[in-house]
Image (cartoon, rainbow, N blue to C red):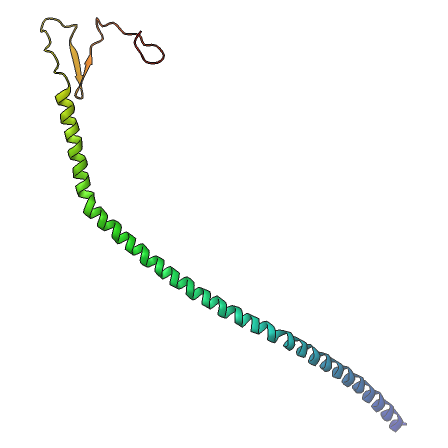
Length: 152
């Protein structure tokens, strides 16, 4: 009886192991097919990615060349502006100052000389503020002006 029991138990064990091995073989077959499909799709994708990376590298090289040219142009423009400022800046300021001085001198020459004030009359006395003569407010009649700024 023990031999029959061991033989039945052995048959069940072998059947169970056979089912496990069949399922494992199916899983390995499906995995092999999946890897083959991924490989078929990955190779063209890797080729496209490689071409894209090469193209990007070419474009970056061009941008680098442009950036270095722009940097050179910027430094040349800076040197040129410094040269122009040092060459023409001082003389232009001097010419402008000379022209201002000439205008001021000509303006003083053509302005009428103020009449001397009488010492007795205090109502005609004027006050000088920062180089300008301001008439006194006493005894002076105000002139009315219309909306256009003309005298009435």
